[in-house]
Image (cartoon, rainbow, N blue to C red; front, side, top):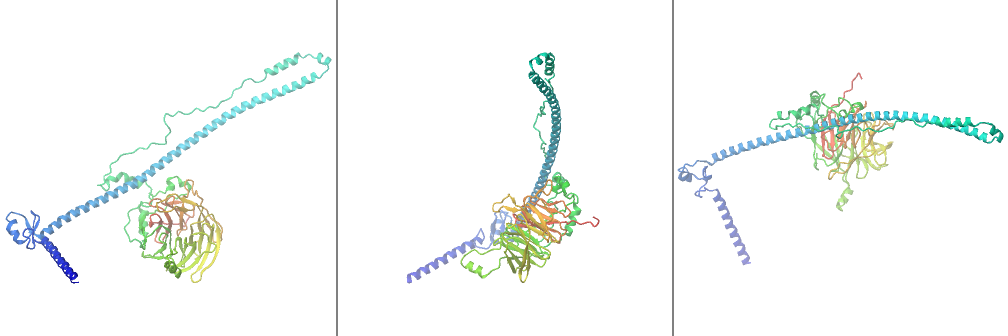
Length: 611
């Protein structure tokens, strides 16, 4: 034991010695560089070393070195570094301006590409019309030739039929003569009959003229081309914010259609706070009332019913990003707005429903904890999750959610309290909407039916009945009159990301009233030149106009009650799966693959009292 104690004492002494040497080295580093015994107070700019007062007077001042106090020298160095830092920040600002200019140029060029492509399509249509007219002329000429040849052949056939009748008559005559007696046969002179027979042979037609059709091809020295692409080289000066972009911006302001991000830059606002869109909408309408062009008008869809003055939807802000924290999303699939202005989002990837109040404060709804969940977690089993597919809220404040985990419809209060769960007669419930009466309408995509559920806050599901049958109804919405719109058929969005699945949507749109009678239908080709690709969401605005999200087209479509259609948003969307409107003049678009809610201005149509 004594040897162990002595060893411990030796180690302690060694540690103390090592610590003393380390402290001595650290203290030496802080001392005067010349003498090493006193604290430095001065700084020599020529030697770039710190000095004490004694060393300053002994050597450096006599040699003519520039010596100043350490504090003054440090302040001077800080000013130099601050100047360099400010210069670097200016350079960074110029870089950001150049990047913004390049983004604007890229956007303008993309719009120019689309315009040139549309011009080529128009020229190609004109060429097709010319070819069609040429084909009609050629067909008519060929018909005339065929008619003339048919007349000549018919005339020759008539002559041959007459000759055939004469020959048959002569044959009958000669047959009778053959059957006569010898004396009677020899009494008649047959010379006249022989001459008549010779005249009959000479009267037969031998030659006639016909028109033989041949194709004389038009000689072209070169292959037929609709048009050639020409380019005009222009120099862009990114240092000049206006002069270098005049050519591109002039085209952008006059010819390019305004899309989702084509509006002026908006003032940044809080992420989830409700925005008053009245002033923003007035500025958008007054700023460019006639420059908006919908895709339907550019593509010749004006005659198909597209309005010449569709609402201007300008991008305002983006809500959320990918993540699992409150206010973040992971593959959101459905969105709706309550009568109180709360925004509800079905966050499928995070197995929850998020509710944002008017101040932007989020809260969430998950599957309620129970003793069964405790037992499952105790044995290490996977807990049941709420996998929302669609969401709706009634005027009474009940939230309906279709759950993909157990193929059921669950009802909650706005505070997140569980009310009821319904599975009867449902095979694969998907879409859900709330009627003005407070009932829920649920679409059974595999059962091919629409069900109407009556739910009481205290009792649960009171009754349910079948509203109508349909072919794979998936997404549903309802207007103020109780008319339910639903998608039909199966359409696929073949565009796929690495981890995102293929999206299934609707192929056409149908409607049904509260009495179960089918109403207005929108077929797959809702216009002569436009069709649905993959319908993934719908809603009805305050005017009763139907808004449709098409993830295949990456657009938001509007179908007014009076007929026709408008393309509200055709840029800035990655995979839209839901749309909703607010009382403040907002259009909320749920972008699944961008994991966010994109907010746009929305000018609702004003009905004229004289119309």
